[in-house]
Image (tube, rainbow, N blue to C red; front, side, top):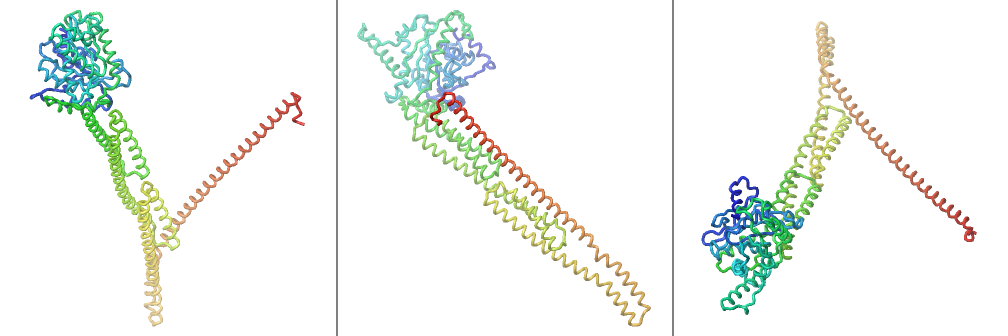
Length: 625
C-alpha cells in the first residue's frame, strides 16, 4: 500500500522526467556486472560526487523514500507486488546538486542509488551487491517497518549485512570509517527516536542475561554494534517516520494527510544535505565521479570470490593511477582537437604560432591541475604524470611547429613563383627599343616596384626563409633585367641595320640614273629617275615609320618620370609637414614646461610673502633682522 500510488505513476514511462539506469546486476554464477551506460554518467563527472544509497528488506518502501528525498515522484519506480521490484542496483540518471537539497553551495554532486530488497536471494548474494555500494557511499539509509516499535534483534539482523561487508576488508585498520553515515529509518513508527536509537545501538550487559542463549544473543548483537561503530564514519542516526493516514501513498509526500510525515521527510533531507556537503573519503582521498566509475569494476571483480579480501589503500592507489591516466588521455585528446583547429589556419607567422602554443600549454596545464585536484593523487604519481603529460604536449606542439614550417615552405615557394611572374610582367611591360639611359630608368622603376611587392608578401615568413625567397626572386629579376638589356641592344642594332639598308636604296637608284646619263643613254634616264623617285616614296615611310612609336615611348617615359617626381615631392612634403608637426609639439612642450616653472616660482614667492606677513603680524622680527 505504501507503494501503490507510485506504481500508477511509473506505469506511464513518457511522464518519467528523470529515468533510472541499471548500475549493477547479479548474473549467473553470482557474477556482479557493472552496466556501462549508468557507469558512464559517473565517469563523465570529474568533480566530487557523493553516493546516497538506500537498502533494506523487501517491500519496505525504499524506492518511495528516495523519491521523497529527491522531490521527484517518478524517479525510482515503485510497486506493491510481493516480489522484489528493484533488481540489482538502480542509479538515478541525474546527479543532483547538493544545494538543491539545502546543502552547501558548490559542494559535491549527489548520486542516488536504490538497492534491491534484501532476503530474496540469500545473505551471500545480498553481500555481493551491497559491499561495493557501501564502500563508495557517503550516506546509507536502512529502511525498516516498525509499527509496534523497533526490535533490536530484527534490525541488527539487517545491519549484519553491513558488518559482513566491513569484514570483506582484509585489514581491521582499513575498516575504520570505511562506510559513510548510517541512517536507520523506522517506517510507521510513532515511538521516541532517542528511545529507539537506544534499543538498537546501546550496548547490552551480557551479565544481565537470564539464560546462556540470551547471553549469546546479546553477545552477537553487541558484536554487530561494535562492527557498525567501527565501519561507519559517524554515529548512526535513527528516524521515526509516522504511518500515513490512508492506504495509498500520495505521489507528492507533501500532500500526505498524516501530520508530521512531510516535516519528518524534510528534516531527514536537511540532515542528509549537511553530511553530503562534504566529499566522501576513501583512504583519505575524496571520491570523484570518475574515481567511483573506475573503482566499481574493480570492486565487482574482487567480489567474484566467495571470501573477498579487499584492500582499500591498494584499490585507491590503483584507481587513482587509472584516473590520472584517463585525465591525461582526455586532455591530450582535447588538445589534439584544439591543435587540429589551429592546423586549419596554417601557415602562421613564427611569433603568432609561438604565442598560440604558449597559451595552449598554459591552458592545458591548468586543465590538468583542475582534473588532478579532486583526485588528490600521491605526490610522486602526480609529478610523474605531469612530467609525462608535459613531454607529450611538447611533442604535440613540436608536430604543429613542423607542420607550420612545411606550410611556410610551401607558401614561400608560392610567393616566389607569384613574384617571379609579377616581375616578368613588370619588366616585360617595358617597350623596346629604348635609349640606354631610358631603359635603365625604366628597369630601375620596375625592379623597385617588384621588390616592394615582394617585401610586403614576406611578412609572415621566418627571417631565414624570407631571405632565401627574396634572394631567389632578386636573382630572377637580375636575370630578367639582363635579358631585357640584351633584347634592347638587339632591337637597337636591328633598327640601325634596317635604316642603313633601306635608306641606301633610293641613293643607289639615283647613282644608277646618273651612271646611265654619263653612259650616254639619256632616254633611259627619265625612266630610271622615275623608278628612283617611286622607290624613295615607298621606302622612306617604311624606314621612318617607327618615329611616332619612339616619340610615344619617350612621352610615356617622361610621364612616368613626372609621376615619380610628383610622388617624391609629395613624400618630401609629407615628411616636411611631419617635421613641422613634431617641432610644434616640441615647442608646445617647452612652453608648457616654462609656464609650469613660472607657476612654481609664483607659488614659492606667494608662500614667502605669506610667511613674511605672518611674521610681521606676530611682531616677531628677530629672525628677520
